[in-house]
Length: 95
Image (cartoon, rainbow, N blue to C red; front, side, top):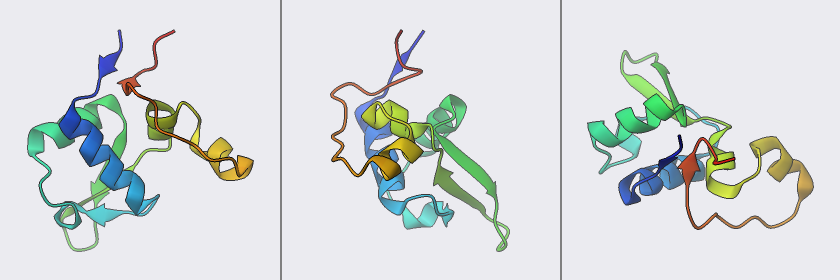
């Protein structure tokens, strides 16, 4: 069953998308609550690891672009075509 992302989850995922495939501390993304971050981690749309400073760092998972745009990240990079966000973000996509 698909999970339809909430407004907060969409906002957080958009901020991670703007950051690209770079690891960054959560401090770089103010206003993100632990509940929202946990939900995105549980869905597998963002990744985390322990950074060099001893704090967790995060980045968007490549599959998140399928949730947001309906296309995999590498396809979007190689196509050169403009891509618009889907109206409803859900994960996993409904079949």
